[in-house]
Image (cartoon, rainbow over all chains, first blue to last red; front, side, top):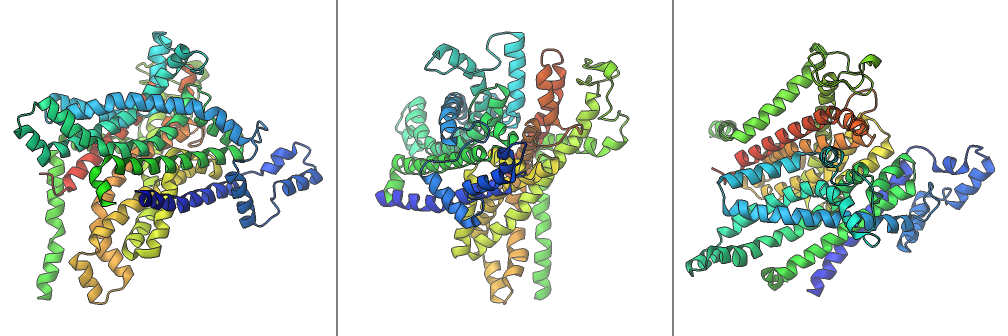
Length: 315
Length: 291
């Protein structure tokens, strides 16, 4: 088992290095010269020369990359040109907000998607199956920023039930925090719920035809027990991996959701940074997201093996 | 003998195409999806000759008019006809969907074929690069690329296309791995054909069906991505219409002119649903296990 984990970590290292090269190159390719922005309106040649030296822009590209990588490994992602604060500090401030949104969306998606997928598979070919499939496909096709706008129009503007925008930390006012995050979580979780439903359905359909399910039925077990204990538990395995992959999608979706509901999170930060040409922040967000995604996938791979006795035996 | 072989080889694809088409025709949802897609394509193509006003023509005397006989979908915040902007916006969305997927396929499919066919170090390098690209969520990568390339519809298409490349590399590679040990590939190798010819004539045609399914489904994702980038101001630039940028403007007038937000979103939803239904149908029709 330890060898398997070590092997997975070894594979993740070159991937992380490639991500870092890509992220570093982004900075070099972005339009405009950040030093000119930093130098202010006077564009004094001496200040420009000093700043170029300070940011090591006169060194060869490979050296610039290595210096940058060393800084990143020390947890230094640079300074935000816009705010003057370290990018690590900004990310540390914003990440919990997005994580709260992502976790709430994940809970919403799981509560809706998995039971709907199980029901759809168990009642294959019935009205409920068709309905669940149609709703799932709609969930995948609806642009989440439009869903957000429509929900604001209906629930906030017309009915006045929930706030249309804003954010409150759950540590300060949990009720208000839940209220402000509820609509965004539903919006962000819809596509995920749809994906979970479709995968749970197909996974359950595969498992329901398996020999051990037939055996369980032949033993005279009640259908509910067969589904819950024998089929569902096994069908859940591929969903673990899927959830990890979907977590990256959640972070990407958060960009739009946070923009619509004016939530001061990670996603809003990257959009603001793009428009402010705040390169270090754009890089920091992409790097942290990709690293998080790789780590979560690593954990999912390990969890998959731990949960699956057959896989465990082969390692 | 040679004639008989040629005859079989020429004759083989036709029944398969017919069978696929026959299965697809029987699938009602796929047909509905196909109909929606074709309808939007026709509308987009006919935009220049349809009797609608110029989509950029402003009229300050007609700002934010509700839908009426004169303006079927109402007017926007500077008096432009929304129907006209919707029709021209369809061109931008569909073009973005199709072109970005073509970019993704043009880069991803050859790399996938090379990785799967040669294996070894070539495969390892391509696989690690694919993993690295896949680790960056599609939209975040597209936003970063669109930002670096500068905001415009063309750059949004390039950004979306490049972000979708790993999907095609991975899919093609997997397909090639299962095809390359087939007898006909071994045969081609045995008669001394070059790698390029084997890859282009023997492998590519046989791995194409799943790529086609993926392409249809990725067009749906690309249309949403283009709308998202335009919504954020990184796609189609004003005053040219795009469904995404129309939604971004509509957000500011939700209580005064809700119709401004209704139409573009509904259009994106319908066309994306159309591609998804068609893609699902194609997948079932091409799946030998499905009857």
